[in-house]
Image 1 (tube, rainbow, N blue to C red):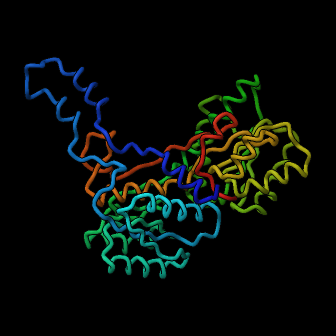
Image 2 (cartoon, helix red, strand yellow):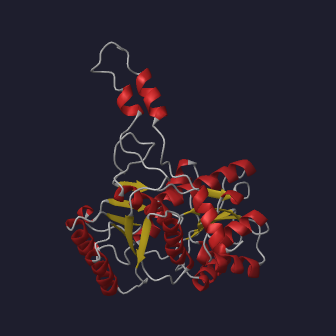
Length: 357
């Protein structure tokens, strides 16, 4: 089976909570209504059958404009691939994508062209959220709903919907997994290391804070910490320094699976295997290693590029004036932050949205 076929199957299986009535919500609210004779208080009929629903059934034609940075690493390449594959799964959707670029001025110009082409909805992952804010606002003022993906504009008036992963949640998920493993092993005072990405970035700071908070909630504390720079080379260098500084470790969280390739090489070079490691983002390579269970890497926490497929589904729904079936409101929410999931040997086979490191 080709890579594209695998992606298409995964996208087809991915239910995004569209379609059908909000039966569960209706039951709950009906049960809470004590005076069935009071028509003013009886809202069960209203919430059980929302008027705006979305589904996988073909709807009105929608042209979705798409703009993202250059696919210069695995995660970003997967963003564009998943978006295109998801759009092609709907026969009524026309996918109008620009060529990926890390040139802010060129991306602004490309979005300007999409506006002039009068696309129905725009999905934009900006190279620089602040720099692309003005063009997002211009699209919105032109009546084009904007789905702001991953890197947030500096002004909420520039988008209809913001959808992104959860950096703080990644840290929490990693910390919780390590705490559970230490408890299961009966390790009362573990030495826990951390290899973050670029320390000056807010996303790194959010991840580290979540990790620290989760460990503290479990009565654990963070030990040695050496930052890398999201590259294989920097990961190997940072891990070598960490291993030299800590003759014994019980657990390590490496923030990024791309740099994790270098981290695992350093671990192999040092002949160390006394600790467990958790990765970050959920690359296909990491998931494969976790399933094989033949390295210190025992889990990774997701920041999945599948968010672009979700953005396309939501753009289609907004373009067709539909909502989400598991919400009683008529329209798609204005902000969606995805949960960071923990991939282990036990559930690795369930995750199809990896990316090449």
